[in-house]
Image (cartoon, rainbow, N blue to C red; front, side, top):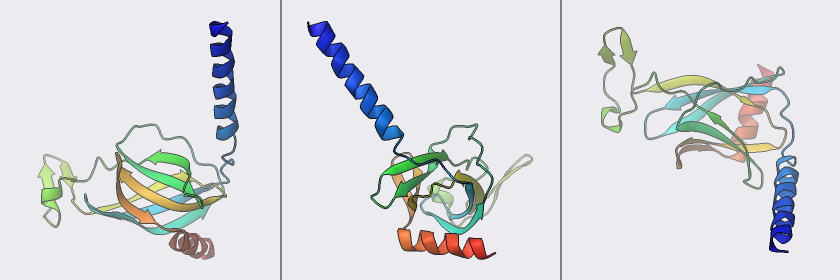
Amino acid sequence: MLLTAGLAASAVVTVAAVASSSAVPEPQGHLILQIEGDARALRVTHITPKVDPCGPARFASAHAVVVRDAAGSELGRVPLDLSNFDLDPTRIGGALTVQGCMVRDPQVATLVSIPRWPTAASLDVVHAQQVLGTLASEAYAALVTAGERR
């Protein structure tokens, strides 16, 4: 009896997980984000919408762009490759670091492609669990609209 009850409860949890995961709408195209800042703070400065789908990220990173809907629920998390930048907080505002043929800048300026979820309302740029920057709903909508006009 306990085994049957456990299996039934497990099935309910699995169905609920599938139902909640299907609540996230399919992306429609993608957005190219221009991200600028340093090890302590990163911000999205431009957004360029594109109609073609976004390919999957093929790497792991502690840095990510977290896409949220108007209720604050996470729609997706896209890894952000900042391995070419000098992210030592003690080097903020400092000169480039040159090691052999590698040149690393403490000032971040990079592009990242993320899926364009139709219900997306805001973005967070994170390192692990620390939020380094937020693009709130009004600013998000304004940057998407400006990018559509380009």
